[in-house]
Image 1: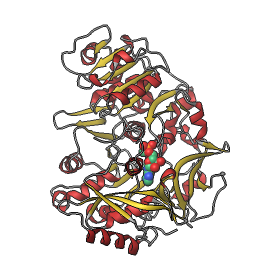
Image 2 (image 1 turned 120 degrees about the vertical axis):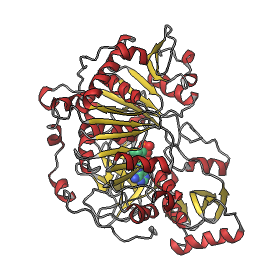
Image 3 (image 1 turned 45 degrees about the horizontal axis):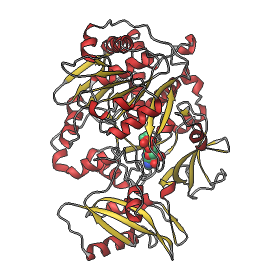
Image 4 (image 1 turned 90 degrees about the horizontal axis):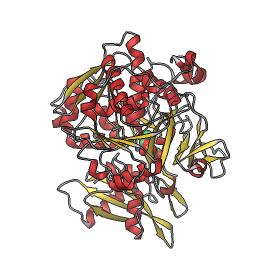
Length: 573
Ligand code: PRX
């Protein structure tokens, strides 16, 4: 196997806590002592994230800055406590929601989204956050599977909630102006205005359900991944270790709460640590994003490779108009962080971008570039302290370094999913020999224990007896000056088993030609290896991607082989 061209190792910040020492001494039981429930036995995420800070000197500290260009607001921890109490009263008074019942939130980011999410948790209800761009079919699948009995949404999005087809759905809270209440419809804002700001929190068991995130695999219907209140132990600890947040930071996580990053590290992690969080509404633009960092003095920034690539594409001219000197620490998640992007961060932002690997199912960070660790560009880093990750073959045997295999984690970390809703067989299918959680990602480990992502297992290409990870080919293609997007699949071939086929979007102004095609093949051949060079190239205006920016290789495969493309609810427009 040929590996991605190795960029020079970038030294870690060795003033920070040593990875090795922390890994050698860490015990999750010690982390539990940070929370009052360690003594009282009573737990509730919303209390630990918000109310607790009003008793410990952070009462008037800003918890939430919100800005969507029109609304520019700031809420202290005390205001958050009172407003989430009000939201809990609004939700409770209009429903019979009990502990463990499911409530969905389907709306664009706004302060009300966060009030209702935390308010519902204060009632002990399980919250299902839905990304605002979901269409009717996707909304239906999730509400029907979970038998949700309430939803918080907006008048604009209501047409995508097929109310008549959802017999369990009893109450619809609409967040907007001049809502006409009916038997089912409740005006959220009007009720907030008059609701009491006192609420008796429903104390739950630490193993009780908290959030339900639906995620789609390469086949089958979306799966409801259930996380419990105890996930706070890992989310709190990794926010310190990996995000390196402290009391002085202004933190910005760009993920929507419809995705797990937007809850675990957009709501819970930062607020469990009493940090100030920025939530930016509205659409992406390089100008708006850079301005947010400048105007709010963002110090820690958690985003994704697609966003970084779009910022890089906007060029230095835009970047130079803003003062980004407040930034101290930058992180990435969700898809492979190409070495090219790390190079851009170091050159243009003056910071190493730290990659973090985890999944909806893991509920928290797993393999990361710990701030004090040296970064090997292209590697996801090492397992966080308290997590044992390795590479196993299909029989669950650990394999030696540099052998590509299944990225697996020893079962039992604190934020691990507790079930797949309605589907115990699916849950069981994640585990091998009762010991290993098998991620479905293919990777290898190097001699220093760093992990290198290769692709989803289903995506690994076997060409003339060689396993090729599509990611390494895509990364190489992205280094070509004329290429902006690349997706690589294996195409069945009678001789080689599979050949490598690349779908490529070119930079504006560049036209496809035979010379360019030959040049690209040669570029990969020289930069990577002959067997990893695409034998076929197809130029496209745009590649199919999920809303979180992942190239949907299964859609490319479906195009190529004329197959059904499966669940497309997470695909961008
Ligand atoms: O394939 C891996 C990829 O995203 C998958 C998990 O997706 P999701 O459940 O939506 O969660 C994303 C955010 C936690 C993984 O199985 N992935 C995630 N992070 C990385 C990654 N691939 C490469 N490098 C990463 N850092």
